[in-house]
Length: 112
Image (cartoon, rainbow, N blue to C red):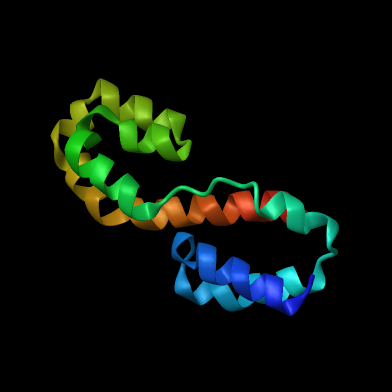
């Protein structure tokens, strides 16, 4: 891919990934072919800030985990009322990282 397109992708979508992963993403995108570029711009990444807000508001119901695709963990939080509130509080600190990991996994799925 063209370096200008890669830089534009990173500027647009950089907030969806961990900062230390951006150099790897840039190298990986530069080395991939142009046929992947149209697919990359159609991916809907999850915004970690939005998921955090959902976690704060209705995290005890597991909706935050359902939102990022962790159905099993979402069901666990739903049936235990967020682990009696403890799991909900822990997720307030972990959900943004989990969202970024899911976004990275989605990017890997598209690139390979």
